[in-house]
Length: 174
Image 1 (cartoon, rainbow, N blue to C red):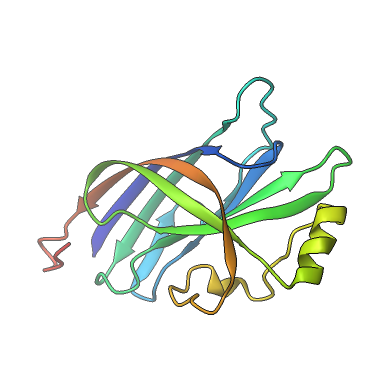
Image 2 (image 1 turned 180 degrees about the vertical axis):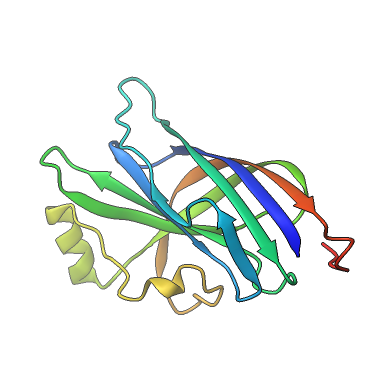
């Protein structure tokens, strides 16, 4: 079977209105794909920058896939969370990227968003500092989110290296 190696890191986030951020991530892929090594879900540590706006995580990603074809190409779902001074965790934003389909080094920026609700939801968010949470998280990686009202949030920076093996032997073109 053809193999794909993905390694790198969830590097940082920028332009978020809050500090003390961490990221939960999850990998989505089709039935033609199988993970031989590596984690398909994870969470970074909380970083509370003192003097800069950028939050750094430098959280490693190391995956080894085998595949029968390119259908169901892997996607990486990202959820940025905020931890307040009382230790409560609230969702800040959602985002996703397709794993790069070309070999080599890739510096990727994932622009994130959060759902906005009705006026009463927004007033409630202002006073409680709580965010709306999606009831169905499958919509994050679904590219048909046109009916969902969202607000742009910050961006997550990733550095990934992708290596392909045996794609030509099995007749798979990228």
